[in-house]
Every structure is written in structure tokens, then in C-alpha cells.
Length: 277
Image 1 (tube, rainbow, N blue to C red):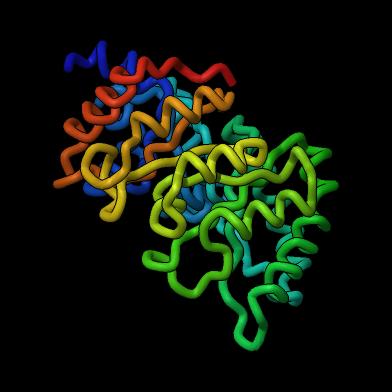
Image 2: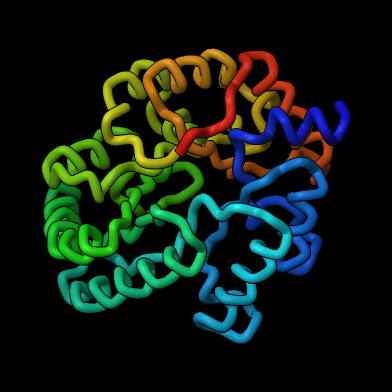
């Protein structure tokens, strides 16, 4: 597949440069993502990179991305544990930071985790505390016009958490009932936890704020595992999702060119059109 063809078919996808090009310095990963055909990237903890720290690091990343013409589609600033009531003030401060970072990267959504287990509490107690913390932050999210996307994990790759799979995140979003709180619908975690990807997607589509994928069980690019991603992506678009899809996967054998070509070929096979929002 030519670079021109890859660029065309990768237009729906955002390269997670935390998992791709791990042999390169961080800023150079942005250039590398462009060179294999992506026009968008995802970033974890931009304020924690060894580029000066804090907003200094984030600004350097944003400047490099703009210079390369690369859009940032999602950031994950890393939230404190929301099951611990002692962290409420820290979480509200974190929302301010996340909003500032989102503005810096010109992105309307950011990832929300913060679901580490607190010893001595039941899952229901922790979910209740988490929900109340999110509700306390809604005013800031609404004022900023940002969307926090809860990312459920899976118990195999992320032990020690209490939001796994579809149901807990759906319950929180439905209870809060706000356009500023949605789900980072990561098909890799959903498959590892629940399976039945299309059925769960149909049930939860109205709470989808952002989408990521990787094949299961090894978290390499689609086509290397058990998920029929062609069918999944067709249904995703049919249900009305028009945003970017994060390639939060490891390139198999660390071969980024092959991984990018595999993702582009998947998009071509289902005639996946570029995002419209």
C-alpha cells in the first residue's frame, strides 16, 4: 500500500504515540506517526513528559503537533482515585488542569480514569463515591464545553480497579445524565471483559464519547487477534459515531509500517469514511 493510500484510509484513525514508536524520543514520535500515514495522535499525561515538566512539556508537544499538521484527538491526564473521598478537592483541581490541557491541544474531550480500588470499600460504595465526584465537577465541564470520557479497563491487564467493561460506566453516565460525561469506548477492554461487542455497542451508543481499538488478547493492531473488526466498524458508523478512532494498540513485532498498513486495509475493506466531527 502506498503512502497516499495509507493516508486516505487512516483518516479515521488517531495514532496513540505512547504505544507506537517507543524506540523514539517522544516529540519525534509525532513526526513518525505522520510519516506512516496518520494525521492525528493521542497522548497520555502530556504534563508529565521529561520535556521541562507541567505545562512546559505540554506546550512543547502541542507546538510540535501543530508544526507537523497533526491533530490531537484525545489526552489522558491521569486522575486521582475518585473512590477516596479525601481526593475530591484534588479531583476538582485536576479538572481545571485537564481543561487547560484540552484547550492547549484544541481537543474537546479528555480521558477520565481514577478508578483504583480503595481497600475496605465495596464496589457499589466506590461507584457511588465516583459518581458523586463526577457530579461535583459537572459545572466546570459545562462551563468549559469539555467532555470527560470514562475509560473502563479490563481485569486481566489492569488488576486493582473497579470499573471494568460496559455496565459500571454505563450506569454512571446514565445516572449523571450529562452531555459532558461520556465513555471512552475502548473495544479492546470491552472484548477482554465482556465480549459481545456489537450488542453492547448498540445498547450504549448514546453514551459513547470517543472510541479506541486494539485486537484481543495481545493488544496488537486489528487483524492479529480474535475480533472481527470489519463488522464492528460498520456497525459503529451505522449507529452514528462520526468521530476519530484511537489506534491504542502495539504494532505487532514493533513494525509500525505494517501495523499502519493493516489498519488502513481494514478501513478500505469497509469503505470507512473520515470523521466529520
